[in-house]
Image (cartoon, rainbow, N blue to C red):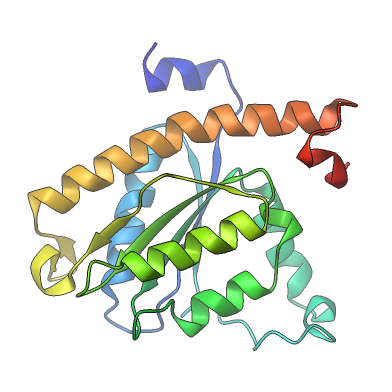
Length: 203
């Protein structure tokens, strides 16, 4: 069965695509938006969160969850079945904007699929691992691979310029659509059941 045929018989997959770069001319933003475009074509509903346009105050566990703008953001994270996280590689680590976003949540990620996109001159392996570590600590699933790219080689003039990056994005978005739907359906079933799986804590 094709992805589009499968999507007809299931609820639309909600994807929160997050750009964790504050750079005006961010290549991370370009690639996350391209992933969002491809996922839309596969029948997904996209919510794009650009942390440059919608900045978050520095996370404070004493006050952040009571901030006036937090409930609206929480609803967006709650609604998502899949979260696509895009971050630049800064000194072998995720950007402060990405980490700050992640610090605001944990239960909201449980049982959901997380996919990673990393802009890096060093293959982005440590950043990808860090994002997957966050997913694991929050009881989320993650794709067994991430997409990394180099701005100078793969993105030019605000567009994807290399066929290799285009192919990797095609693979990732296909897998997000397929496995995202499977995991979302199982998450709904687990929340509705009385079985003692790891999702029982969220009932």
